[in-house]
Image (cartoon, rainbow over all chains, first blue to last red; front, side):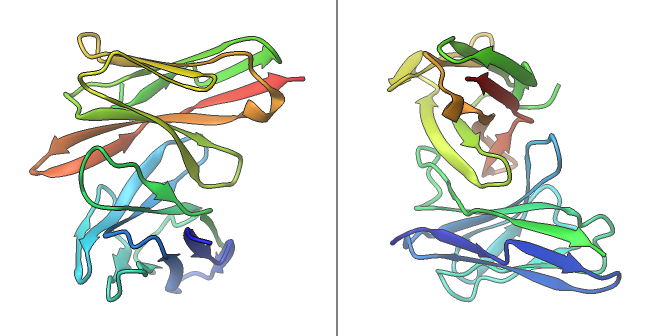
Length: 114
Length: 113
């Protein structure tokens, strides 16, 4: 059963705490992406990775960090520097970086601040 | 307005009617894609139309692209209650030396049985 998974489905963060969102894909895709979605809004790109051990900042990278040590995994850490982390976080992957390919999305993680 | 801005933001129709959603963008694009999102879920890709294409069909979906007006439309024919979801357009372009995908804010479609 191929696909892209995210965990957990819901995550609660205390003030000043770092939390990590998991994203795993078994589609053998090179490119992976993290987006943030706020209520009634489109998706905004946080970070993306075109290949293992490489990643670039997106439009709203401040307060977030990522790693890409394995092709299958692209975890996102929401640091204490992110002052407004409550949002729906979506991970996506794509075969490569060609503009003719589509992104496949995971089911999302909803992050809430206690 | 932002790149990939959908119109209307909300649409409510009766089952069996057609639903039309529009998307406008600002910069030159390589392609434009439409996605669907059920409440609280990830996005599902519906259709991709390349910049040199004008119309594309997939089942009950029809997408048009007018690059001179920088706009696209998504038509869902004979709508069903299961079509209730948010629909997003995403434009694919090159910006600052790298490929960039920009999503609009979406159209929330409600199909009433």
